[in-house]
Image 1 (cartoon, one colour):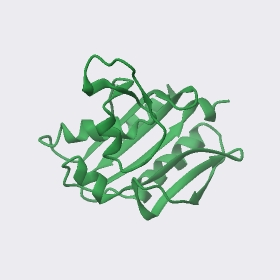
Image 2: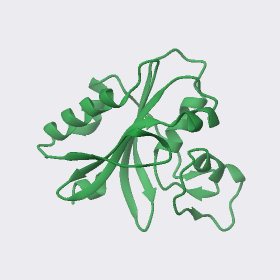
Image 3: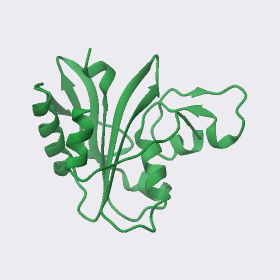
Length: 174
């Protein structure tokens, strides 16, 4: 609840999407990550269990290009990797969307949760090189933050810069 309140206070709108997603949407992020495919999907639109939330949010942004900017959205939901877990994904889409904007939110969020964290630069093909960080708390990687790679933005036919972050809440609250 506290996390939602913080994000709503920063003018983010909560979204809800399905745990199933199209493999094509995941591939648009240009990031190779193990996928769990549904063996007999009802349709191709929902043929894979999502392994992170940001692709779902990118799809939502692409479907809402006709709305005015800034568009700031988040979702707290289930992801499926080696095991099922809760994660929060957040995207900020406007002409000045950047790493610093989201870093301020992480600072505020971790402070509100009374947790200490640090950040280290790392490479992630969905994000711009040199503008990406992994979020570390209690010696474990909890998530990542960065500016979305222009190629991924183009794959969703969006014409605005986007900054995003994702944090594994199940891991954070262990």
